[in-house]
Image (tube, rainbow, N blue to C red; front, side):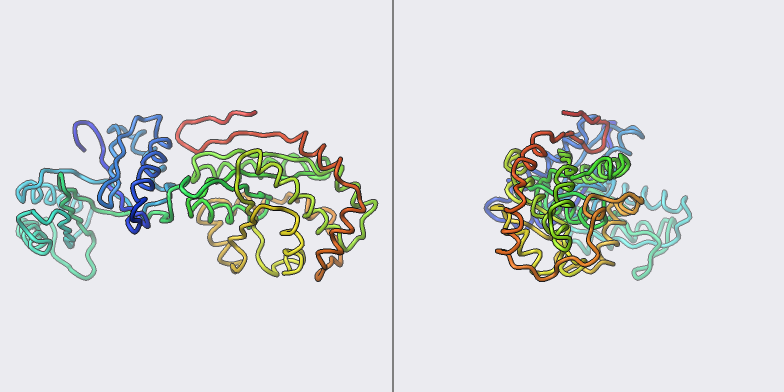
Length: 401
């Protein structure tokens, strides 16, 4: 705590590997965390491979800051830290205070890990660790255990001051959201598409979301589930726009006039065409889906080729080679799994044929599509779309459009 504030120190990830445009990534990381915490007036700086965060020394501010750091893409780890002057006396005093606190919490053994980033400092990293560790050991507060200590006290001597911290929490890694453009995620109520969206967020892409529903065939609870999924994604991406498009009339037309085995694929073709219009309206440069090769009948190589041919935009499929158990594990970690398994069907599963087409030809499917004269229905679906702006955590409320 410094001058009534609480300090946090975070390690940046891939940003440190960037060269000419590294500062651009650092500025985006600073901007993202500042926006996430704007309700508590933070001070955020990134320099020399570290993110420095200072917030007011209140329980509410600290809780908010730690929630934000847990959702911040672009850092590998973070900790609440104590800043002190760059002298051995001050560093030793602060380290001893950390050890005393750990002893009161029932810890018995410790290890010092020191890093001298400022090579002008009067001690090497190993010398800092030895000298500080000797003082703590001789005081009787804790005993040394270099292999399996109860607590590790980290010391970093940076260019302006020294930082000490104990428990270090794992970060999400990846790149800061916003450095890789904008994409449109086709968000269903299933397990896969939210994970696909998160994967693209972690590569620095800002995502907006598109959901297709078929009311009254799909209940309002199905849309509420998707809204909740979008809220979770907004925690990691700061905000998102959820566009909702009704496919009811299109599905009625397909049910009446389309060959039964082609129903799902033709519906997917309609979705891609509408998605391209929504993406261009929102200045998204790609579409994102949760498709995984051969996971279901509509995701054979041939079916994916057909849907890809329906748009001029690139389609990113970050889960294309992913194992289902790995997808579920990620969904659980990011907080979407419990929402995704709510028992409400989406529009793709409602009228799925028993024996869907598996090996279609692009030309044949395009002929089927053109014969159905779906253009006016697609225009109506796009025209009647509804949008909602959804913000992440930290005291910011949603607003509808």
